[in-house]
Image 1 (cartoon, rainbow, N blue to C red):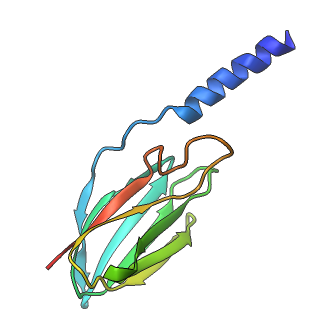
Image 2: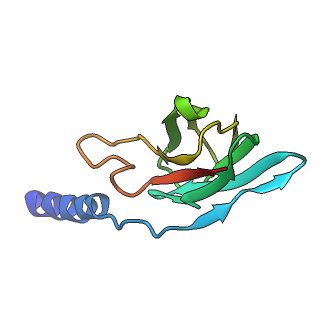
Length: 135
């Protein structure tokens, strides 16, 4: 009986952890206030909202990254030092601010690099996005 219960728990939990839909694309263009582009990002159960952010080159950016309710920890990672955008930051419900100035036009990915044991990473489960820098 214990084996049946354990197997059922594993199937239910395992399928919830393994299944993931590719996130829908939500786009926002940064608003400029006092010479700074500002965007708020919400990170939650394997998503970033918005996950496509448009900013202008050579204008400072402030991303406010907040965690949606839940117990799973998340971070945001961007590795584009050639474009002035390189950071790794854990965030919570209160929010964290990431400041940078994009120096190169293009599209640059960001993602959560957390992973639980042998399951798919948060990035593989859909927790990723991109910052599009325009001239």
